[in-house]
Image (cartoon, rainbow, N blue to C red):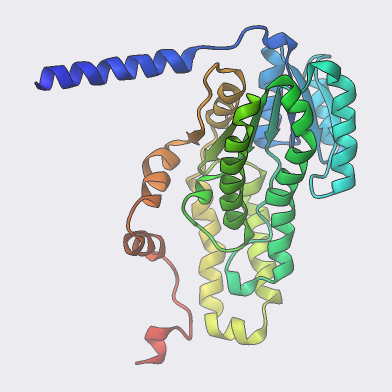
Length: 322
């Protein structure tokens, strides 16, 4: 009995491996548009796909980043300056892409551009702080996708949206996790709507990686800035010690970030080049074995683990009732 069960399990795993290992042919005929190619995942993916012989249309936020990327890649790669939070800019980029791909259509769209600052303790933030992140991480993704969909449908192509493990379990306050939960929802609805058109939608869920988003200096400046502009009553309630521990916590976060960005870009590449792409890709060991499993745990257990090392406010419940 046990032998039969093991044999069936082995056969199912073998079939799964075979199915997922099948790759598309004629990749050199396909065009992929990637947002956020200045640094990090987008930059690495652009170079990775270029080496595979694909036509890469890479959008950057700055001229210098675009110029540097061009120097490191072949003549197949084209760059454009794009701020995904600017709707007019998005429409212009869509026309640019359409001019290049013509009747072939756009095979792949990778919505990679994203920011994490300003973020932090919810009560230290303003609605404008939340909106700044949502405009890029969520509304920007939606805007780019809706504009590009007609040329993606023409190619019966792929949409690859970069979410986060923070889109499955909330690991911090501010707009970042909110935006990633939104990406998950948008991607799920889009995937179902695109089925009749032959368009596949995949979600990438990275854990902690060393990118511009997790840069220590930027994160510390962010914590200091939002603390200093918080109302005086709020700062008194939390206390200077709470701020100091939040500030020092940034160093601990950096220590758990992985340098191996290819764990993420390999998932992106598979979503674009596999015959049968996955719906979700959990990138990074922390995501696979800690964060995603944590999202399935009872709420009280998740709350306990995520607040275990949290600093205590100066005027918190425990101190005010002594």
